[in-house]
Amino acid sequence: MIDQLAALLGKDFVLVGDDRDKWRMDWTGVYAADPIAVLRPRDTAEVAGIMKIADAHDTPVVPVGGNTGLTGGTSGKDMLMISLDRLNDISELDPTGRTATVGAGVILSTLHTAADAHDLIFPLTFGARGSAMIGGVLSTNAGGSNVVRYGNTRDLCLGLEVVTAQGEVMNLMGKLHKDNAGLNLKHLFIGAEGTLGIITRAVVKLHPKPRAYATAMVALQNLSDAVNLLNRLQAASGNAVEAFEYMPRPYIAAHCENFAQASEPFAEKYAENVFLELGATNPHDARRTDDGSVPIQSMLTEILADMLEKGELLDAVIAQNDAQRKDMWKRREDAGEFLFLRKPHVNTDVAVALTDVAPYLAEVTRKLAKLDPGAEEVVVSHLGDGNIHHTAYPTSDDPALHRAIRDLVDQTAVAYRGSFSAEHGVGVSKLGTMAQCKDSAALGAMRAIKSALDPKGLLNPGKVYPAG
Image (cartoon, rainbow, N blue to C red; front, top):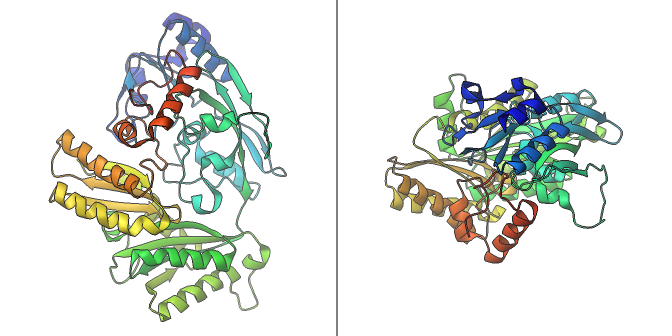
């Protein structure tokens, strides 16, 4: 099999032995991979050829992009790992149609730069944008910090090219905004974590680059007041809120402890803090007036001043320049750089309705104190869409305790009619929760689809679908 793969790709792109090391551990440092070989195809045809060889030898295949996932989605052993890093071309960027045609190996920040050259944006953004790849963000349906305005990755994708388990190429690469010609297969592969097919190319939507931003940190009396603030900003701005991020006191404190250049957002230390940003694409809202002010920034200032006067906010700091704006963003995007440094930790990713965020977090805190007295927790949240990232620091390395904490966080979300997986996927870390909490009919349908598309179970085995 290795000889056949070397003949297909060239021996320099069939990595064995120590050459595999770069791909053997994901970003968390928790989930390991021990592949037979790491394969680096240059195009879709070579990916298809790999799958035909793997199918002939009944050998499992795990696709990998930037390997920045958090749920063990690329872990495993005795399989072939396909790195899509060489499929990194932006073959077309259409400023008029506002689309880009990209390979699965295009790094997110590279697409950002390419779009920016045309005064456009690909709005998906998060801390790992310098290493995460398009194939990976599609496979997990990543969300990021701008979901409140632009939606998840699913909402930013018009077309896909997918290699099937049998090595066939499925061309779904349309640029259409409407297409009801049968089942929407594109959405089947987005979020499937490489278990149904391997995404090799995509057509993604671009958006106008905001002409001006209004960015602020605010301190709230109660977290439950945040939804009122969000609704007021959306109403006043015509739904121009781009980011609405929750950073409670433990998160701020941990950030300051881990970064020497970090600073407190306010002179006083508050329990409930929100980072928010509005983006103006309308020239009227972005054009400086005679007194030098920018309308969207003035609007934000007026709203926050009014709420401060009424006691609905405790404090507010508005970014006065781009440097201050970047500092505020860095405070949020540094999360992945320090939350996992402390060990042991249990990282979870859930979603609940916006009005349930405050009671949900209060209940989790109470339950965690009973389950593991002395355990600590740090929360950061895409509050605009109810997505909560909860990291617990247990008092021991006991795997049973870690599973219990994960169950506590996930199952409490389900009890609030939420989701135990918001944007990080299922991988292997949430298989237990899938088995316990996913609707049985839905699980049956998922397994049937998997069996139909991948009857040998070769694509990313052991992920997403709990044993039935």
